[in-house]
Image (cartoon, rainbow, N blue to C red; front, side, top):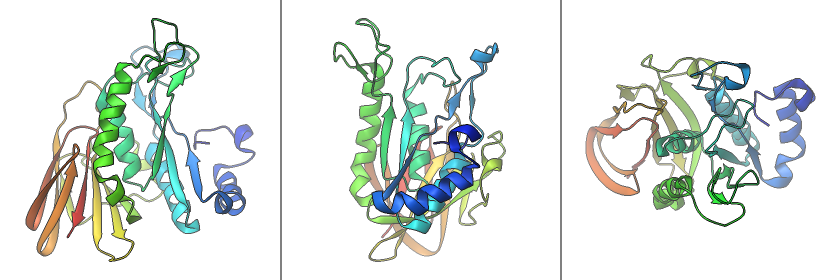
Length: 272
C-alpha cells in the first residue's frame, strides 16, 4: 500500500505496516511491490483545474528503497496509466512524458520492475479504451504506444542497470517543485551535481566492480510544460562515461559532463 493509505487500511502507522511486511513477508518473496499514483486531482471534491503531484511521491519511493536496501530485497513499483479519472482522486494520464516522469523517478530509487495500472480495464467499451489494451476487443490505445516507446527506451540499458545496486537518491532543489521534495525522508543535494531544474540523482555502484553510475531525472511535472533543463556531473579527474538516454547510448569524457533533460525525462550515466 502507498503512504497515503488510511490507518484502517494499514492496521496502524505506515512505518508499523512496513516493519511487519519487511520482517515477515519480504524475505520470503524476495521483493516488495507497492503502488503509488502520483498524478492526482480534487475533482471528486468539487474543485476544478485541480491537478497536482501527490506530495508524498518522493517520500514513499525513498522510504521503500531504504527498506529494500536494508532487507536486501528487490523494489518493484506501479505506473499510473489510466486515460480517464477514476472518480476518487487519480487523474488521467495525458502525455508520454507523464509516464516517463513516473518511470524515471522510480528508476532513480532502484526500482527493478514496474507494472502498469491499468493494463486493461473492465470499464472499457468496444469504442473506448481506458488504459493500454481494450478489455473486450484487444485493441491497443495511444497509451499502449506511449508505454511501448518508454519501455524500449529503458530496455536499451535495462540489463546494464540490473548490474548496479542502488545506494542513495539526492534532490537538487532549484525551487521549481512545490512540496514533494520537502516530504522526503532525508532531503540532500548532491555536491557533484549542478542543475538548472529540480533534479533527482540516484547513485548506484556496480555489483562486481564497485564503479559508480547515476540516474539523473528532471523532476518537473511535464503536464502542459516544455521545461527543459540540464544537469552537470563533475569529477576529480577526467572521466569517460556512457550516457543512456531515449534508448540511445552516447559517450562523454572530461572533468564534467552535462546532460539535457526534458521535463520528467531521465538519463542513466555510467562511469567507465
